[in-house]
Length: 344
Image 1: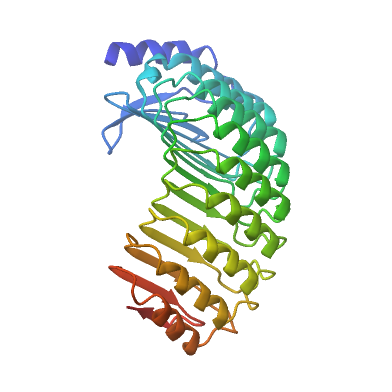
Image 2 (image 1 turned 120 degrees about the vertical axis):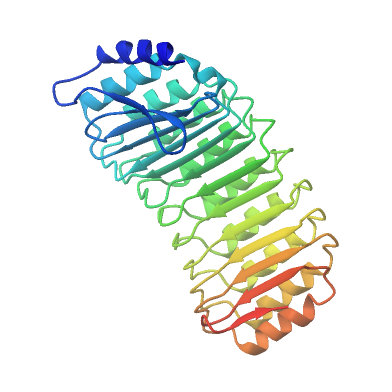
């Protein structure tokens, strides 16, 4: 193995620039082989069995970093054995379409990949960059789990939701999907509708997490369109939705979700947060509780209504009474303050 790694390091040396010091290779505390640039702008880690790869980079994406990234992606030939890839970008203010294209091409070589986790905290990512990334992901036919965070990528619009979900629906082995678009405030009801239309074709999906917190242009109409599509996925076992601070959502939106939940007969776990949504009232909680009655295998419920000023203790009691016949191991409902936690 050491000979292989040495050969790879030699291959990478041709991609060095004067501004980047020599790559350093060692085994880190997690018993992973690691190739790290001396200035810590780019790092590749992979386990001894070559079944997991971690890629991390931060700072400005420049020509030197781009060439080094190309070198690393070409040099690590054993990545065809990888089962998991984790990518974390920290404040990459210039992560553009070109760099995402390189990343997409690199990922397409991971033909045995089953799980991918990406954290893009990069304000410069655009719809075109995400479209390029989606094209790379759809080639990974073995993928079973995808977790992508685009929080604070404020240039993303409804278009990106349509393009990404259209590509991902071609992954017929996908069982778990998590998408975080929190604070992407250009996303609207139109994006939720398109996302839902594509999600209903994910026949093998068992777990779904969607985070649109602080996407303030989302309204009841968006929840209605999304709910209409999700209720056709009978394979769901876990669903997690976060629309905190989406203050245009009202009880009407909760009614749409309630109708959706009660048709997902295989649901075992529900997590739903609507913090700081003052248009939600006790009546909306009652509708939610009644939907839980029809879910015979439901085991846990986590509802968050922190700082929803029109929800009272009476509303939490109504929720408890409405869903009291559900076979749950734990039901949590967060009320208008941190002290209003009801567990029954």
